[in-house]
Length: 433
Image (cartoon, rainbow, N blue to C red; front, side, top):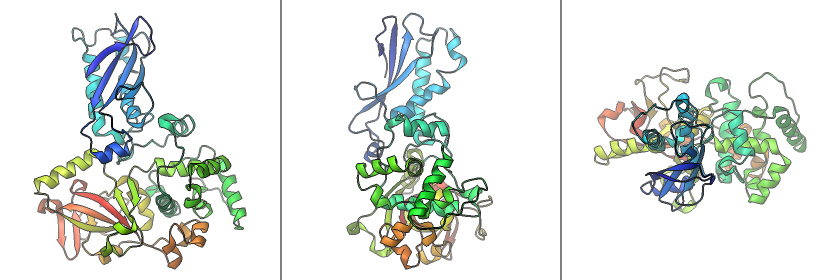
């Protein structure tokens, strides 16, 4: 609906217009991860609209969002939808009286349609500034702009973070994957997204103190790029310690503010949903110590996959994907991409361009490389806690991928090698270590 109402600012000569979307049919998983609770509607409220000359807009309108019928507040989906205003509320349109001459309310109709479209691709845009992200995933995120990171972390935009939105096991995995990417000779190409320390000197000092506490030699050489970040992994505190409680994380953030900023960037920039599978629900066939539920597709991509699956009578198959350890930082955040013929391709494409998968775990394993003790925090290594298998010689990551079993999906489908032509035919389901 599009309804006019009393001004939120309670100014007599102004009113506001509430643009309300029905979100009752969103899947339960999306509602939970987007923290919508049990509300049926989300509204963006454009306030301070002149009652008599609503096309004139003497000043920029004030834009708010609300869940259901509650008073306006800051929440992730509301902030993402409110960002649609940048294309309208800060454009020359507001200086033009008669852009939609004779079409009452057409401006608000246009904004409403833009909001409806944005809802389909919500996670493809920065929740603070509305800029297009490198790649959309399942969870809303922010861009790598320093101002957006500052607003999110320091000013409480969207509530900020009282604790990172991951479990200790997942945080340890994110740190490990990041370290493999940032220490790779190919980091300029594969470290996507990349962190930007607002206080690089402060981060360097905290890392140096960590090294001293571990009685490790600090040898730092400034060569540009993300040098200090490449030295963080081994010095990081144990994920279980800092995420034991909100109080523990608050203490960590107070003592080590720049390290905490890095931890929060790792979690905020990760748009996939990762959660370790409990022991009683693990897939025995995989014979893996660590198994994670892994959902990386945006709602729009998931809907496309579901449509292809339904058109194929629901017939799918589960295959494995292996990759070098340095690539997982990007895969976890961006999902599987067809890198054939690009600078990211490291091995040949003997069976044509596409995403290489296999029904055989051993085949995918040969496309992988192992994480070892250089990629994980010393404390976790010594305590054998977050990634216990590292102390036994390292571990390899493999993805379990659901693929629509249709000939149109395949570039190649024999000799234990399956090459999927396009990303739309497959969807990530699990990550196993």
